[in-house]
Image 1 (tube, one colour):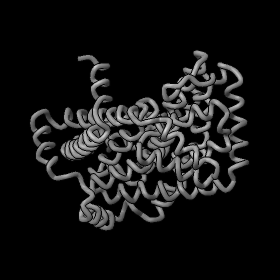
Image 2 (cartoon, one colour; image 1 turned 90 degrees about the vertical axis):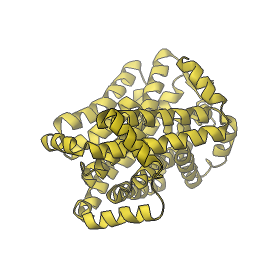
Image 3 (cartoon, helix red, strand yellow; image 1 turned 180 degrees about the horizontal axis):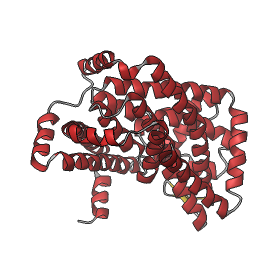
Length: 369
């Protein structure tokens, strides 16, 4: 059975069955990753000690890996499992998570750029105007940078002020509190995860857990493909006439679907046909940027990682505060971002330069930070 047949069978499943399969696969992947990372802690501690990760390299690593993998959730999940095993500080975790958010729009930007360079753009199964997905990707990337680059600084300083890395007792108590409220991976997965590790070894189990995370997210994408895009698009459109409602809609759609590509993809046809302009779309994108933290918080809670929960909440609080400021000053922000958009769209060479810059900045953080 080839990959197309597998995807066709997944798409043919009832929506509820796809949701159940996604949740079970995701839960088991998180449990397996956490258990395998714990088993690998002695080996990983030696590696981490020999390769200390400072602030800028952590930020750049999260950004670059999320862009190259086309998935920020996996990067955040792996980072959280490393933190839960004591291999990363809360500050390093925060910067990796922020970096993964900066890279989250990378796949939208890359696909949009390739579509524009080929002279066409396709989104949600609908042929749209040339460069539409590129422009939306550029808009999303610009707004993400406006929010999350200051968030990296503000969140890092907030954690240092709270001294989260030194509050082992507090974060451990928070972890126990999270577990005490039943927000943990079901214990039925514990013996299964332990058996898998005993059978194949911790390194292969960890790699398999990452693959399972990708599989669960791929199944989620297939389930989203079965959703009536026109109906969702109609619901989204009703909330875009007001910046605050638009931000809330973007947050809800992204938090529920855990997919920036989906939440942005459903507005591409509206944007390309001129039904939405940059100012109307920007609040939706800003809300989506905050909503993408929802699945990261869920993973931290599932792992019972108190420090991880604090770090993710710190990112969310700072990012939300900055987003509110941006929404209040929406017009000048959109005008500033539009200058960059118009420059990049001026020629194919500018588009290539923008893509190169999107990858060069995090690479520079990693190499020279």
